[in-house]
Amino acid sequence: MAVLESFERRGVILKKEVTEGVDSVPTAAANGLLLLNGTSKIEANTVERVIDRPYFGHDPFVLTQFRGTIEGEIELIGAAAPGTASRLSTALQIAGFAEALDAVGPPAFARYNPISTGVPSGSAYFYHAGTLKKLIGGRASISGLSMKIGDYAKAKITILGNVAGDVTEVALPDIDVSGVQTPVAITAETFTLSLNGFNVDGVEFNSDLGIDVGITEHSEARLARIRDRKPTFDCSFYRPAKADLDVYALQKAHTLIPIIALVDGGVGKLTRVTVGFGQIEKVEEVELDKDFGYKISGRCIPSAGNDEIKIEFE
Image 1 (tube, rainbow, N blue to C red):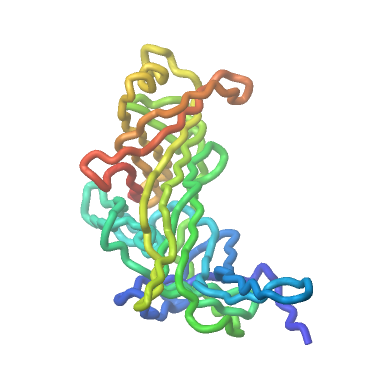
Image 2 (image 1 turned 90 degrees about the horizontal axis):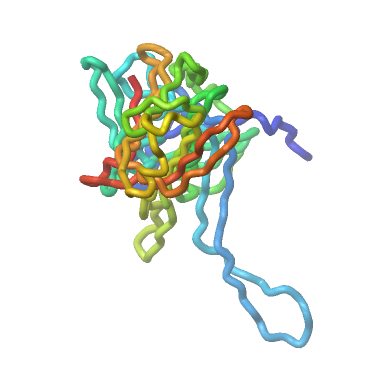
């Protein structure tokens, strides 16, 4: 007999692991992650058994390298108390960002800088319509980071990990995400886009953090690892005067420029993404509400290392 439950009933809890691959046992009361449009799946590699036989028919197979993913969107806004960790903290850390908290300031902040070693792992539980999938040893990739007029700051996240046990039947708990703030609408009053120190009439900033997450399996373990990071960016804005910002000259000279995208809703609701060293790869002339604009795209280049992009909440 079918068990009829709404497909819309779902939720995620996530907690950093002390020991990689050992379930950290997240709880609905303390470790809720506010995910939008969340989905999950279990995948495996198919190894075919191509058997010689005197008749037609498909080949049997063996499934190997089982892994699970949780995907969705996160809202880029910090804790109401500046300088304290928000519910995004663990998600950003398992995506390869180190957390720095300063509750004193001024200003008080939570800062997330990329790292290349020592990335922590996490345990993630995905509840969906009476079912539960548990991922352990999970690490994440972040893409589709977006700040756009008429929207709010958000990003796409994919958590990859080992599937712990079987998919079970469990009632969806009451996951506490009460500490998550409502995101700030991106408007003329709240949005600033700075390129090479000049505030353009910005419409949109996007970044794909280019985080390569994959499964490494050997005789002793199966691990989700961050294997590389190659962030990119693009910005759309109305054409500035050439004397203020000459994007073609910056492109031609291979100049590394700072890019700052800022959404400021007041204390506790400020989100800043900084590309420390952006190199313009492409300049496009685009229509923005029937006016002339530019869309520039390029690469986030490290300088001293682990400094090509950062996320801050104040």
